[in-house]
Amino acid sequence: MGARMRVSLALAAAVTAVAAATLPLSAYRVTATRDNLQLRWPTSRTIPLEMKLGTGQIDVLLDGTTTWNAVGASAAQGWNNVADVNFVVNQSTSTERGRGNDVNDVFFSSSYYGEPFGDALGITLYSFDAETGIILETDVVFDSSRAWDSYRGAQRTSSRTGGRLYDLRRVAAHEFGHVLGLDHPDLAGQAVNAIMNSRISDTDGVQQDDINGLKAIYGGFTPTASRMVAGSTMRAGQWLTSANGRYRLYMQNDSNLVVYDMVDGQALWWTGASAANGQAIFQSDGNFVVYDGGNNPIWFTSTAGNPGAFMVLQDDGNLVLYTAAGVPIWNRTM
Image 1 (cartoon, rainbow, N blue to C red):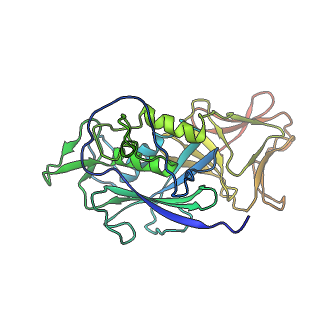
Image 2: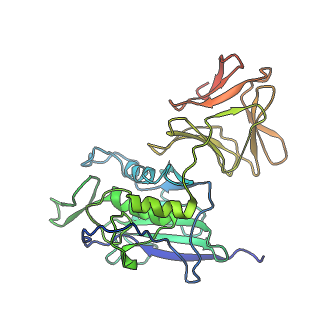
Image 3: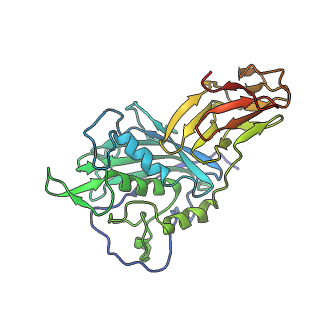
């Protein structure tokens, strides 16, 4: 196979008109290239979103949210634990962004890299492998000139402009569906209740038709184990999930182990390790160690001498290492 060719594609978000409320059979639509390649991420993948909508305190929004990044994180969470692919959110304070930088940037702007929005409230831009359709990067850009808020239910009017008051959460949920590889079912002649319809409506979250489409691409969500025992290994892209599904210990491509809160979209703890081709091994002596690609230890719990030990990602988000007798000897707060 030759060198991987990166191709770019822009896909418009929901437009400003209101969709008709006709609700027949389920009929999702997936995004495909001109060569009929279905755009998708690798299965069993955690997709990082760099939320750059703003972390600073704003006036309290209608739903009580106080930062735009928190609104975006909530929208991303609506797609998690649905299919065999999940978002994790980095609530970034950086303003740097760019196409082709291998970062999935999410931000407000007056244009999308110099191009006008037209009627679109936002745009999703893809970079993908031209031979396989595997997505390599997405950027999501929202039109900063609109009147935005965050609320549920029927659409509202802005007291400031007299025009439509746009709910960022539902528009972001639509955009993140594009990020995952879903397209507009209504533009394919299908009349369904879906957040992925091209026209914004009173639908304010992910619907069953959207879920059906995501499962068709990636398969159903399979909960992972919440504990590790001696001999277990974690490699890039693998994770543990707490029994209640809220927390995830994720092994990133840079070998950094990170505990994420999948509801709030925040990283709670990380090892800080950084290396290519690393792996985390729960050794038979009870020590949990991250090794780089050359098999050199770069982070560890210093719990050797405890054969039979096990580690649990608990329902409170704490990562705890226990002796064989169930006595805690290390946790992520130590």
